[in-house]
Length: 507
Image 1 (tube, rainbow, N blue to C red):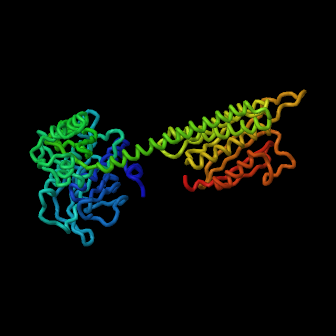
Image 2: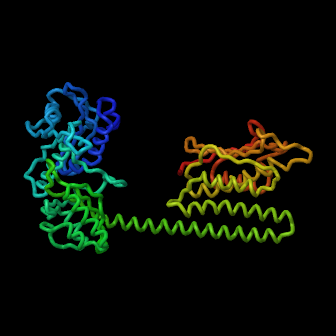
Image 3: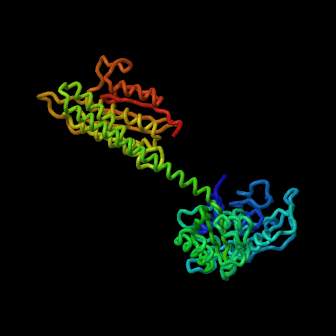
């Protein structure tokens, strides 16, 4: 299904600013649909002959839909869209006409012109029309709640026609909550409550206010209820800003262990401030879970930090022991263990600074590669570089993979580039020793190669048998922990290449 932008760019001459405004309406119009108990369809003119294209649709959560089928992408003209033509040409809300039938469903048509205000705040030209179509099959005598919903919906519809709805969205805000059904409070121009839905009344009771809201000054009430005076002041200022015709950001109020999210919207049909609409939602349980997750994340990061510290302590003890050992073979074994422990500590150090159990692996590889060239037992200066990206890897893969790469890099440096023989000139710049780590993802697999341009594998080398401890560790980790495969082979242009294929089904 094509998006609103795709349809508008393909079939209309609307400017980017016009399309952005239509996106803002479609991002906030669930509110109007629920208050209207009606489907909303966003129509844009295709040409000057009265043809319109539906680029967006929303159904109410408070009433049955008038359309069982999706209308987006539908192009219509003629008598069927005469009400849209009137609203578009005359720039006024159209409410005349008899009910129409969609199959067995009777519906009432309305059409709301959409304006985008100019840079100097003046009402601009009509760029689209919102069709408001109400299913009349369940029509009944409206309750007080429904009457307040419909009155507020008419005010917002007029603001769409004026170009003042929706208000600008603040950075980081979403359109998911609160909604009409969560709780609605309507204020008059003085900030007094004229209506509060039952869900809104319940939300305020959880904050400790047991009386009825009607007649209360909501801004002052927020200041009295909030546990934190700063939160109460910000919530109160949001109400006052909406009464002045501004669109304040959403605020939270904490009181008596409960948390309520509030969103204040100005009501100013025809440019006249008549009050504000305040949507509220009890988010106590949501914030409790958030706090539990924050505590859990902090605990996990602290664990990784302590594991890193313990591994560094182990590495320091092994390094100290290596200095006291007189046997060269034992010293080399201890130094190799130090490097293996240090490579694992790198992963835990990264995890201790991450908010989840995954790490950006490229930085770890670069640090391991740099360390390999510094500590490898060779007199040759070997260059290291990485091509491609490992991306983000879960901790269980990263811990094993860093050990594998550490061993392969050390083997490439130490065995691919032995010390230069006496009387042999140093290699030319284009032939200088180099190890290249390559990584890319393909079909939920991670393909990695470690290639050098050194002397290559010995003639009698058998990867399946024997080998030094480092290669035994590599084979065990790749085939066991990582459930992948490894192949050691001559490089295409000389040297040696180790190729790993690792499944990433869990990434």
